[in-house]
Image 1 (cartoon, one colour):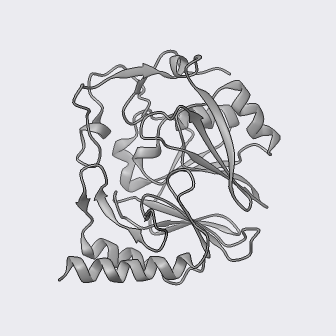
Image 2 (tube, rainbow, N blue to C red):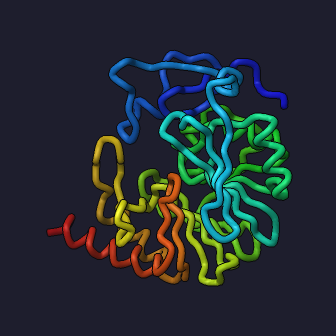
Length: 270
């Protein structure tokens, strides 16, 4: 595996930058944070040393989770969606080595990568180069790209069809380009929505939450949640995959999202 030579990788959020810098704009933003110990950096090469290893675990019908142990940055994990039109990597995580790449190729490789929002950009360019796959990002979040590259494809508007049964939707929660992915052809037959923390799965799995900033606990603006709920209301999906390991709603997810939006709006609007 070839990679960019020693490009800086933020230890706190996992974002790789294309040039040396002292600050991490993503961590300086109020939707993330700089630790009390200060900004710290590593590199893609050092991350792939003996301190971490890649992991793959099943997360649902036709869905594999990809991460590393111990977890890195905010604990991001990616999801490999084994669609009939070709495997799609949903979101990204920083760790990738030759062994992990070989395991993914044994599952059919990656035909495209789509990322929900900047906190999951991590080393997406490394992944794009390794699998010769385009990365789809919403243009509203272009300013947060730390390492520009021709593999990055920016889309605009409220939806983008990746394949016959895979469509990206801009929800606009958490970030203006905050994106979810709808899979109408999942093997279970009920449809699936991949939401990261644009729509966040809470511990009891009976509701979801909507925040502008999760670490700093800033609520999302009610009009943004209302618009997102209206945009997603026509979609049918039984399962919802959140942004971290096993944060999954297995049944009735489309109803839960709409009920949660109504509850949120009732509380925030009094």
